[in-house]
Image (cartoon, rainbow, N blue to C red; front, side):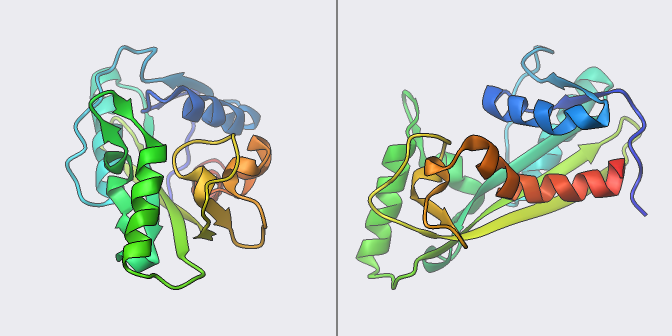
Length: 203
């Protein structure tokens, strides 16, 4: 039996403004006020685990300990079948440069690796997201979501972020980055995990 959330404020353990806006919209119908990590001046903890749930737990627990508020954190990434599910939890690391993250570079690297392996088409991939909702008393609930699709090349679309320009979700002929953001947010891996969270803790 999952624990129901009965508070009025929830801390979203992210410094990503786009992700925070998305969460605000998703939580609005449930009468919960969303606070972001940046507003609370929280440091970003080092993500040292090799699983989505492990890294989400690090972020959620650090936020709870710093503020005493219940906190929700997620860790997400893309798993590519022909690359043995890489980059996975290291998705953001593949984009790291001395001047910040460069996902065009990361996507180009990914495409080149697939070409070197002569990976057959369709090149299957999935976006994964794991949410950890942590309470100050140590209780936590975990919800995992995914979105299956294929990789396309060249990149297409101007919206979205990360690997969105090369990810075409199953059942669509456009990439995440060619979609209206509201449509993408309704079918994404994060939406899948969020629906499970709402059903479990807010339903």
